[in-house]
Length: 314
Image (tube, rainbow, N blue to C red; front, side, top):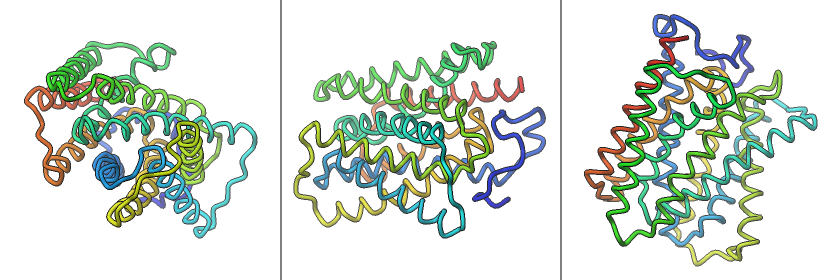
């Protein structure tokens, strides 16, 4: 596999070309699985962190800023330095905003709806990305895509119904969980369309995290959550793990988006869902209802069908 810290020399803003599966790239598949694992792990770590005393906004602020600084240190040690113009800084700040909004939603809701539900909801983002792409003329409908979208939408409805049957959960938390993927989808479109020309992935990823951390500090200050409740020792360990997870996960995430394009990137949805749900059930003893399981399976199937149709047309 090529050196992932370097800016690729091929046209990486395009989707994979015809014959992709015939020219199978094991390195890209491993990259896909690694990114999906870190994203799925984030949902579980978030719930554990909130239970150890962290407030969602302060926890996200510390971990995003810390992860960004760690990743920035890695790029500096590897000899990479970014020279951003005004447009690149604008890209970083908007990218950070598209990161912080859904993650604040998820971290506030995860204690109430569970990490497994958050992971399944996150898998819905690729289908929403497609709707936005069609609306702005970047993609077109096809029979396979319509089938995949319909399956995923059905899954989203089942997910919502599966949690609404639990009267102990306020509908607000379910709504936050399901609106989060909307912002993730807009973020996917924005990063692909406005990627600064000639900029390596690992030069952009740290600043998305750093700006997201700053946004989260601002939100904590405005909302009065600046002073966190007493946090246990385990909470600080979880915070450190989340920093590493953000640094590694989003470093690879930006490489994957640049090298594979938005179509290939969208396949992380099922990986996130499976990893998050399995970890939540195994380590947090979360009980996933039949409707939630059926909804999660439908979302995963819809994303798979959608991507199969997309690759078949490329």
